[in-house]
Length: 180
Image 1 (cartoon, rainbow, N blue to C red):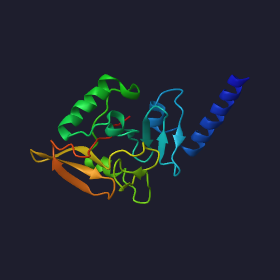
Image 2: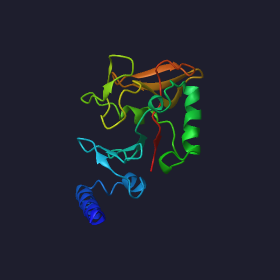
Image 3: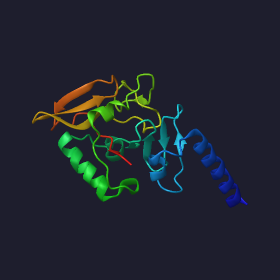
Image 4: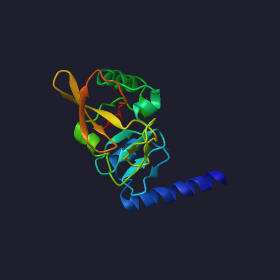
């Protein structure tokens, strides 16, 4: 009886997703069969229940938790490549094509009207959708260098981009992304 109810509930959910167009997203289909999904309040993001979140606007699949929440260590830009390689070696969430986001991709996550949580160890508020992991880093590196010694990133307290030395770890992390 419980299995029949579960199948009925799944059928209703899939029908609703199809009617809203969410199920037609390639990223949702790519999340894997049987993944439990939850939509953000405004339906922009889909949490697949496997530590990934898909942006229905861009189609990009993001790591739900930033690298700090996953490792409890701040990362320099130089260390970010090692973190990405490790995600791909482990086939994080079943995928091996994780990468650092571009600056423009990263900027799309900032939403001034949304509050995720306070930044870990600080009183500043992180302005990304609450569907993402809470109390992570307020500053994320992008894939883009700025000259030989610096790289760009985004501060999610203000939405501003920053440029910092690639060797700097101070309160910076990454949020891996992939294009399904």
